[in-house]
Amino acid sequence: MSSGPNVNEDSLTEGELVRPMFRLAWPLVVIQLLQVAYNVGDTFWLGALSPDAVGAISLAFPLLFLVISVGGGFTAAGAILIAQHTGAESGKGGLIAGQTISFISLVAIGLGIVGYYATEPMLEALPADSDTKAEILPLAAEYLEIFFLGVPFVFGFFVFASLMRGYGNTRAPMRVMAISVVINLLLDPLLIFGWWVFPELGVAGAAVATVLSRAIATAVGFYLLYYTDVGPEIGVDHIRPRLEYVTEIVRLGVPTALEQSMTALALVVMTAMVVTFPPAVVAAYGLGNRLISLAFLPAMGLGQATDSIVGQNLGADRSDRAAKATWIASGVIAGIMLLAGAIAFLFPEPFVSVFLTADEAGRAETIAYGVTYLQFAAFAFVFMGVLQVIQGAFRGAGNTKTALVFAVLGLWIVRVPITYYLIFIAEWGTTGIWTGVVLGDVASAIAAVAWFTRGTWKKSIVEEEPGSTADSADQADPAEDSTLAE
Image (cartoon, rainbow, N blue to C red; front, side, top):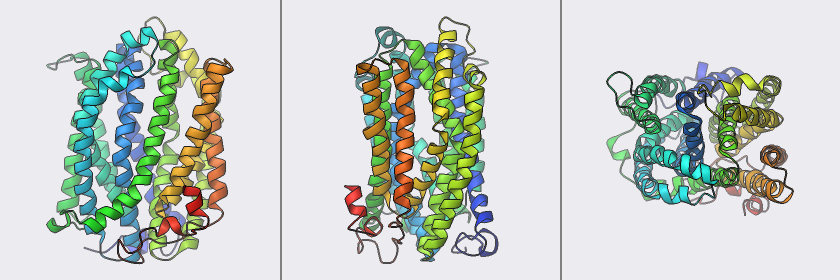
């Protein structure tokens, strides 16, 4: 097979830049849309079941994210390494892919076991309102325990998609994801409500549907990796763990895992503050976050495309091209998110109400809170989008510590403290929740763009063999970037 994507049409390192960039990005946007379709499908059908069921998913999501973020960090490391080795034409893409697969598989099994047994203690630790604790926590526990048993399948697809992204092929994981989503959407109502010959499982049914559909996606993805030529060529000997490559994956992956974990922990802390309010506020907060994630899809796709583009161009020693691609992507996403923000601010109620079809007490109140949250969040859409692209550039350069710093800045230095102050000290009530979210996104985006303009990220991490440049990319400017990373 060839050492990389077709140079004439798909090369990210030579020729025209804009067309191949969008050719890489649009399937990633679709993948993100399909990813959210899992959650939207669950939310829609559970909303038809009861508002408490929606609240249970709202409580479960941050805890799931906390565990998944660890695997996400290491899969991102694999994508970074594959991208730079592809750009440098080193011929080691298959080896990097194999090392990533074997390492992540072990991590997934361990995290699934820990998550399963930690579900009840984690939920009990939340300072929930008495009604929330009695009505929602048991449902959240049902969902989480089943999901954690399926974590290896969830991670399996993430590994496949990340490796293919780094290689420059985003259409294959898009097709696999589409198959998985269709299966999930078909299984959701059957297992939640017990239609046809299926048992009525309620909230647990949504978890079972998700795990089964992920398992199918993982099986198809691994078949494509091992038995076709759509991605890096993986040999049997590539799976055996090799210390030098595992060390490199860990070195790059730990900051990204920490970044995502810190994000998840911040969401857990935010949820802990939100659950001190009545169930209607908890449900509205969860609904608002899911709607924001929908608007966030183009930013996620372009951010992931940017890390592949930057990685391949730095591997090919074309740092100016990497910077140009980042600025183009930032401008495009700013325009898209500006339009999305305007729509969300002007017409919030139809988006919020579509996920609450159950005619039960609390529905109108939940919609009212959800509308207010979405209108507040709309002001931060542009900042959220640009931040994703800039963070993608940092990761693609292997500068994962810097990406970690800006995640910590927005969440732990701004969002969480300000939200706490506004809710419990200034007594702003629910307005304090919405305001804290917006201020955190704005602050981190401005800081990240300012740092990116300094150009201290422009260095490849594949100039020498793994292990010989222990701090390569993250020390592109030791006097500056290392100080920030601390």
